[in-house]
Image (cartoon, rainbow, N blue to C red; front, side, top):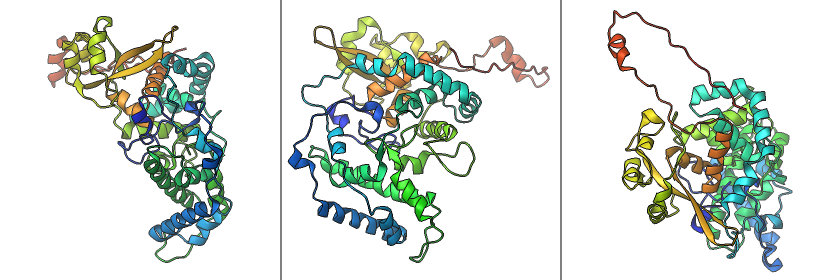
Length: 423
């Protein structure tokens, strides 16, 4: 899912693939972020099959013993597992000469075809989106934006077998500075895949080493389902670990299907965002004051952490007092914030940067995909769909205060205005 903050963050772990809210993440975890990569040396590309098989066998034995799953069932599912050399090329970091370009990235995802598809997806799922927003507090626009940027609502979910992808990256990751950490991450995801598929196939976790009603064909089919080149699955591009921890059954059919069920995908995205700290009724980011570029540049360090308070940024002239006022669409002055830098080359090739102030909800999106480019694109896509990007809090009329506090006062019905999609 992300690849645009810095090389350090490029080396971090996957957001939506993580099993915990703060697990680091790799930017390259779904098709939406695919970039042209240099071709690696052919001699480095071929991982010895014997070594690959040995490592895979050891991992299968470990999962079997730890979770008391019959080894024969796991082995049957991986009989035809193989490495995919092209996967190793796709996960390489950009070359040293590569320049990140926010303008190009934005144009790729916030464009007429994707927005039209987003509105159609909303039309088809409007009732369930509204229901999900009310139950989770996650805006419908945000859910639609994420699924649109990830896969164009299921049009681009990947063509690789997930077991081959994860096996390749777990045991044959290319030689990069973060090779060991990356291999461990994908080993963990491969374990999660085994457990996820065992559960989907009706398998139990027996006290003895015998299978209890597992459907081997379903187990194999789950292992063979298509994914992105980093193992992300379905409309929202969840990694196996995220499916096990955050995916939910939205359509109530008793199973989670992120590939075919729009309701499952919608409910799962909302659940992920809620569990990772989405603040209902709060904005995602703030634009900065044009005259404050020097002050902003001094604070921009590429680290996705709420290092400053909104009040501090107001005092530095980066934000306006209105942005620190809940009643005017801002947030509480003590709310956390950080500087988001979005670099791009101008027409002469000179380095330029577009800055915004990221808030808690921006950071929540970053945990879905650890890229500032991605998070800002989601925010702006949502705005194109009608998201206001401002606080939504009740405004108390002082004239009504005494009436509301007086038990003898006549109660009045409050008119509720339902939010509808904006075209």
